Length: 292
Image 1 (spheres, rainbow, N blue to C red):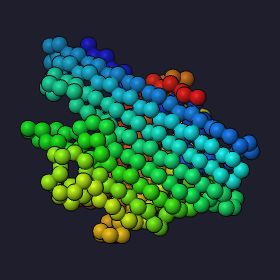
Image 2: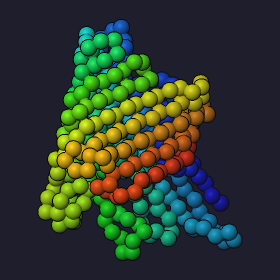
Image 3: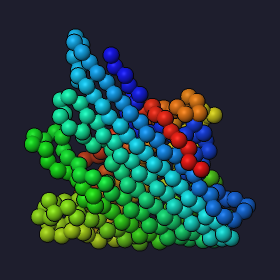
């Protein structure tokens, strides 16, 4: 007998997909009133499976769970705007052959952005972004296991003054020709290794470069919505033509107030981490709780 409540490592969004996509988008709503706007979701998913004398074979027992906290806080007063975004995820999976839980998702991504309106669609602003993982990660293709990451290993802290183009509620484009990015390598295990763009014997590296981030959120139908984010960073001090890329895509299809399915595709390129394009595609079903 197999019981499965979750088909992937992506979390379902709230049943009111259209509302959430607009709320979680980078552009601030061009509201008539000043004040605070906030909202998001919390998702928790469990998957379990068991086999006994199963002729086709497979894992005897599997157990996994995933959590997502996604929240946005916006403030507007006159020509001034302040956006804050919190994206935190954690997931684990265990199976008989593993002998232990393995991390399947681990993400901390926090952004705060101030803007002052210059015209109908343009803002001048300042953006700060922090991203890392919370726990130690391993390369499970190696035996014995090889440590691959930890908290602030790598970690990135980005300071970016620039211009924000927001023609509507669905799209925003932030551009900065002078961005400072600090890459951290704080785990002592990696101290003697040149890793993540940080030299051996060093725990951090300061990069200066150009930065672009674009967000697009679009309700497709009453029951479906698309959300995408593209980040580009060119390091002026080291191989500026090798642009770091982070491109994430999510299509959400809701069934009812609580249940939705998601299809995600992430594309990452950072030659300081691995000199190949990274791809991740996940199909998932989950239950979510709307946070107001």
